[in-house]
Length: 217
Image (cartoon, rainbow, N blue to C red; front, side, top):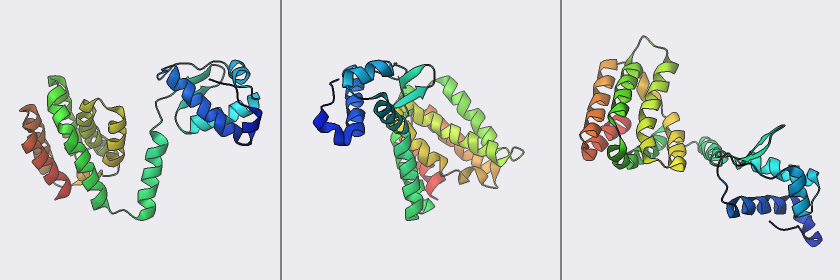
């Protein structure tokens, strides 16, 4: 981290933001790591604490840091949130059809199936079975059933272990919850049991076929 030159002050806040980003990368900081105190940061970069706080608020709105009053500033892992919110808003502004959104969701989830059969354990399949029952239970509220349906598919996607991919996929899973509302709960449960059984057998081809049938019929 370097001091900010006087000649650079016309973009001072932006320069402090870039400097702080570089510092986080150079120090190989990870989620939960605490940045130096404001007094120390302002001294190192030769800027006022007011300018520093403006830069830190900008980084917080970008999901890069989290400011905890009375504790300090910490590296966050919410850096994907602003991008995903912008993507969601842009799709709504553009009037993207539900079919297009569902197609994107299928491509993302299908891409995760190889990792799912590679890393899934028996406990996960037990969880998927229970979530299938909950999502098909007409005695539960729509909110409970849609939450169970989303959790079922996200549990599979999380097998990738790629946090950025998971968050991107989650955006599309949460925007296509209508499957859990089908009136034929028996058919819904049967389809998902076949899907889970295919994954249990490590039959990715069949699993992708079933998933495509569920989402894109």
